[in-house]
Image (tube, rainbow, N blue to C red; front, side, top):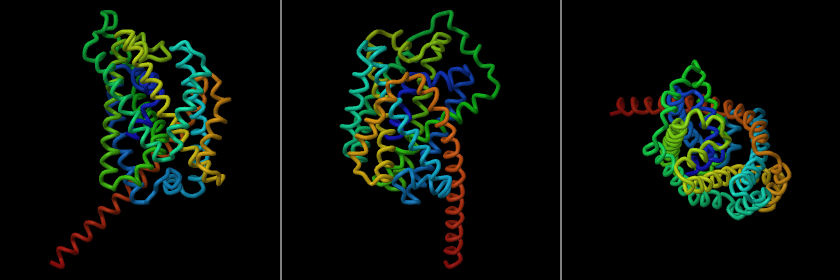
Length: 354
């Protein structure tokens, strides 16, 4: 649930990420969705493998092991900065949902998101995991219900037929797009996934992360298929999935507004917990005090435009994700290879002794 909750946030639920990274590439986008499914599963399993082998229960330990003391420390600081900026972005997103879709004051949306995050995270790691186990199933159920209905029941208008194929001429850029999508999301997922090392055994942790990655990829594919049914219209919407849900009924659109807001909250939880935990270690202040301080300081920036914040913050976060993911693949490949080699040696020695 942690993997799904961290990645299926505001950008995913809005449909904007899926449009930019996959729908834009038309029929080639389905290849990208298949690629990210495998990458999410493989990277999630490798992260839990590493977390258990190194007995790491926080993302800082993982970063130091992957990148070394100096570079790992620098990336740790950058991740912490972007986690804080991510909190501001999600508070801003909540305000945008209240203002644009519920016709209520933006400040009310920010205040409610602030309050919910404080209540759910005041218990620390236990609160994070409990809230994910509570909120993520509701979010996924509603998302699958609406997207699945669109894919299976709703049929495109005649003028949309053939539009998907017309978008296919993008060379091989869909591969780069798929890699960037995974790396961009994996940085945040890492913050949450490492928390599961302390509550799962090695086998269950690795299998759980792998299955979570496959489920995550399945959600990407489902949303891609739903959005492609409404090409080219979805390209021009800030929140494409709300447009798609509106084609089903107003009830579906209202339900999807709930999905979008839950996506905002689960992303805010991951960002706020990751930054608060790091800030508490750095300052020596208590976790609750740091939580209140983090969220309160995030409010002024959250008054900025949601789209402006996303456009400035997330591309740089993606570059950090590329370095983390590359180091993870390299390190775990070496560790797994070494482990397999020693097992073969031990097996051959046992055979000779027998």
